[in-house]
Image (cartoon, rainbow, N blue to C red; front, side, top):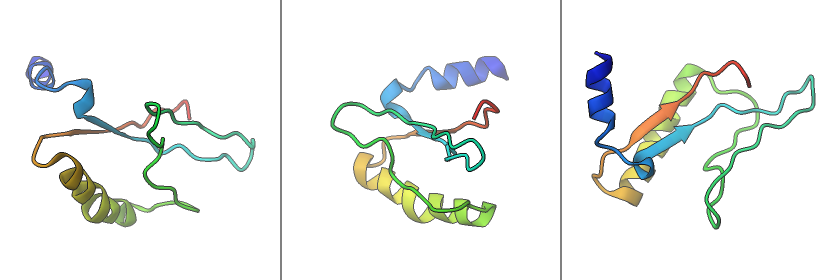
Length: 88
């Protein structure tokens, strides 16, 4: 299974990857988590005050993210990566 995944992912370049990150401002520590983007490109597509629940997140993907990717890149396949790293 892992080898199949590796072979499938080898078909994509770094430009084919779209990263979603749940970075937030931590109200308890006052720390901001920063995102980076290529020069001339904004580092965020969307910012929300408060928190998303599951239904709101799925709705945002279906009604906003996917149509934007289709408009921008046509039918070229993209890989959407959402991490769940405990470091932030």
